[in-house]
Image (cartoon, rainbow, N blue to C red; front, side, top):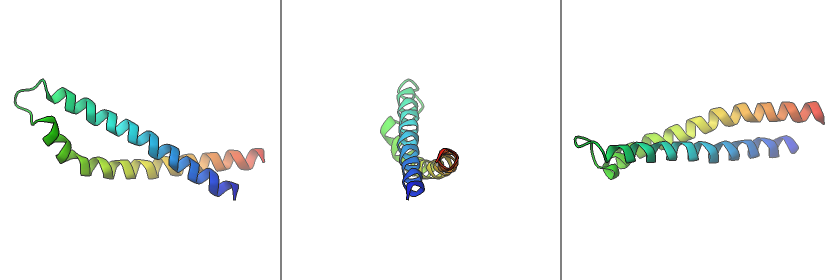
Amino acid sequence: MIYLFLALLSYACTYYLTGLLIQGQLADVAEGLRHRPDAPTPGEYLRAVRPHARRAHRQYTLLAGSALAVLVCLAASWFC
């Protein structure tokens, strides 16, 4: 039961952290678009990129969450 809890906790942490990182990068790029005259508006850019960002968020969460879950469960089995 503890391993299930640790795996869910690792997925939750990576979901939160990858969401922060991706949203921060999107906001930074959208802010940088304001200074370019030939670029689309930040709203248009965010509407176009949001589905790709959601997919990347899901993929990175699964990858990093799986790696973190394995490491945390191995550490828990070592100490318990």
